[in-house]
Amino acid sequence: AQSVTQLGSHVSVSEGALVLLRCNYSSSVPPYLFWYVQYPNQGLQLLLKYTSAATLVKGINGFEAEFKKSETSFHLTKPSAHMRDAAEYFCAVSNYGGATNKLIFGTGTLLAVQP
Amino acid sequence: EPEVTQTPSHQVTQMGQEVILRCVPISNHLYFYWYRQILGQKVEFLVSFYNNEISEKSEIFDDQFSVERPDGSNFTLKIRSTKLEDSAMYFCASSEVLGQQETQYFGPGTRLLVL
Image 1 (cartoon, rainbow over the protein chains, first blue to last red):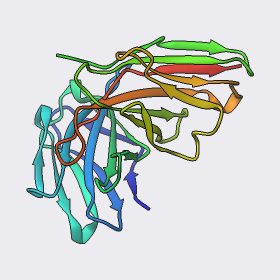
Image 2 (cartoon, each protein chain N blue to C red):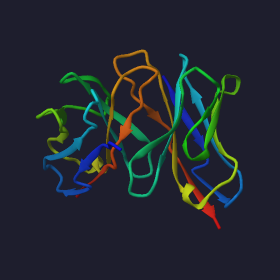
Image 3 (tube, helix red, strand yellow):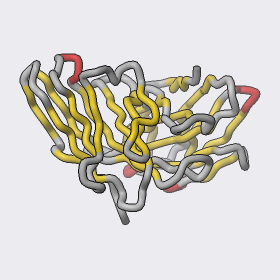
């Protein structure tokens, strides 16, 4: 069975500081990994996805994530936080082997950005 | 930019009542999903739908739940007899393709409260 674990339900950073949101996965088959963001009162928006091409994936809004098989990790980073980055971030895993590609989500990390 | 829409945004109902949650997927998408998030918990997969059939469903999706695409544009989730534990945020998602190129686009959600 596949799963993801997000370490830290709440992360607070200062504006301009590095953002690091952690995600570890468990999968018996090569995984496809995603980061979604949810702004208040909005739906889930895809930030980036890893589908077995380059291990360093660049997404929208300056975010990127690196797939590390040896560490079973897919941490999300951004060099310099902005106030508009305050939101909840979800890591998810899927495998494209079946009839559908259901996403299995982590519990989410709420990012606060302090001025 | 095309987006997935959901109505209503909030629904309050009495235990035992039937509710129908509505979603309008992106117009050229073929694959449809429902997920839910109980407050403070993970986003969980409920069901996927393709070609007017359920492709996959989770163990949560019991006989009290049903989905249909009644008119080629709407995609609905019906809960026949709601329970207190059905209180959650329900997200609809759609995608154009399966496989590596798939991106699931999510709606803003319907917050269901069962009293």
